[in-house]
Amino acid sequence: MKKFLFVTLGLIGLLGLSSCDDKSTYQENEEFLPIGFLVKDATTIQIIGPRNLVIDELEKTDWALYVQNYRAFAGQEPLELKETEVDLYLFNKREIEVETNYDDLSVAVGALKYPYTYLGEQQMLECFSPLKIKMEIVSEEMQSSPFFQKGNVKFILVSRSIDTEEEIILVEKKLGFEVASEEYIEKKLNTEEYEK
Image (cartoon, rainbow, N blue to C red; front, side):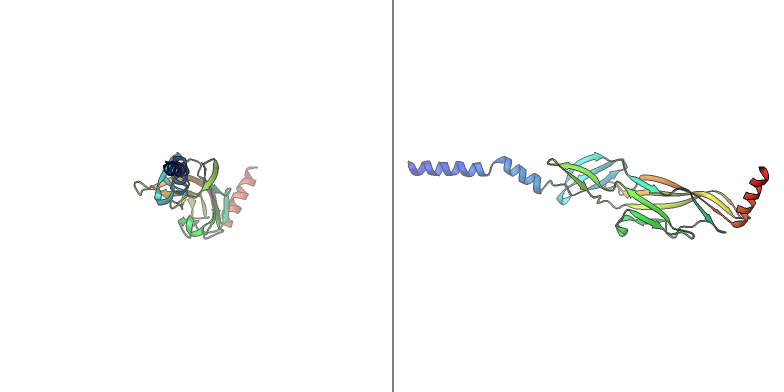
C-alpha cells in the first residue's frame, strides 16, 4: 500500500511539472516568437515568426520618404538620373545618394521597422519584404534657347505583395528642381530689373 502511495504521489508530482501553462509558454517563446514582418498590401503588414507562421495582421501606413528642398542647377542640358531604381537591401542603409549629370540628390527612408509588443516587451521588427526606391524625372517646362528646364523628381517607395507578387506603392515624394543656362539667368535678371 505504501508503495502504491509513493508511486501515486510521484505521478502527481510529474504531472505538476509538465502543466499546460509551461507547455503554452514554451510554444509562445519558441514557435510564435515574432521575427519580422512582410508587406501584404499598401496599408497592411503581416507579423511573422519562424517557418513563416503569420502571428498577426496589422495596419501600417507610416512609411516615409525624406527628400531635399528645391534644387537649382546651372547647365545646358536636361537633368538625368544615372539610375532609376535602388534596392534598399543592397545598400543596407536608409539614406541614399542618387547620381545625376549634375550634383547628387539625397533621399532617406523612414519607418522601416515596426514596433510590436510581445509578452509585454516591445520589439522593433525588420521588414523582410523587398523594398526599392524608384525615381522618375517629370519635366513641366523646357526650352532649348536659352536652355531652361523646370520639373520634379518623383521618388516612390515600392514593395511586392506576398499574395499577388504585384508591385505595391507604399509612399511617394516629389523634389522640385530647375536647370538654367547662364544666358537664361542673365536674361531673367535683366528682365526683372527692367520691370522694376
